[in-house]
Length: 265
Image (cartoon, rainbow, N blue to C red; front, top):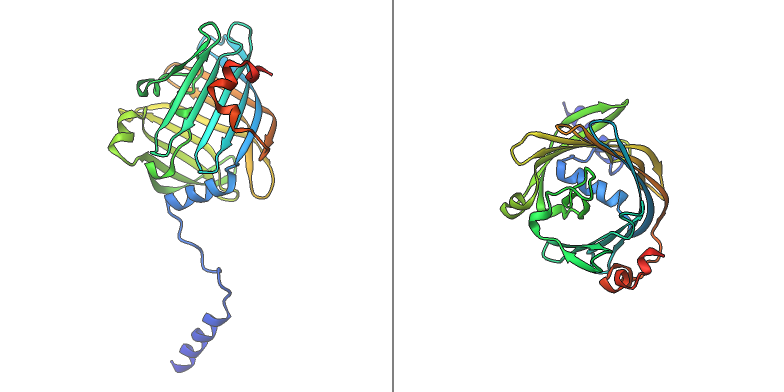
């Protein structure tokens, strides 16, 4: 017995630090996802295809700007470039330090920014399958994360994590009772999200495709498909010309930038 104890003691000193696997929880996994794939600034061109239940298609071209400011808060600007009937329409989103966000919709015909109310969060944006809520940055502390198991998707092992609003205020304004996310274990990247409405009924599914590795351990999806099941409605998005961690002036994310017409350049 003494020999066994001595051997086990020696093994303790011989095993390198970090050999023992870190205990993974839903929150820890999502923290790692955020750390690995968040970028400070980026721009991208987006090609969007909207398909209704009859198979009719509409194509749209957008420009997206994103920036994380020095205080850690994020802002984004989405601008429609084509077709002509909606060209110039823009959505400006600011994350606030109280955990909330503000959004303004700019319609060229009105020549002013319209502040979106919290009641608009569940509404779908410009005929797509994205709600205004989907276009806001999630504050990780506003949700509860439960690791429910593992599943294999397209040959890749994934963590399965259930995300629910963590406060009564968030549950009241959110359009989702829960989201179930599938995170690839090897690259800690979200490849699938299943959305359930406030009554807990399956609403839509988002899948990310054509994954590409950027700098370091950062990955991105060049294609995203969203299917709204009951309506049999789909939105397919392709990202082109993405430029990450570039210099973006603060002024890009202001009312003056839009009203001046510079956002169309």
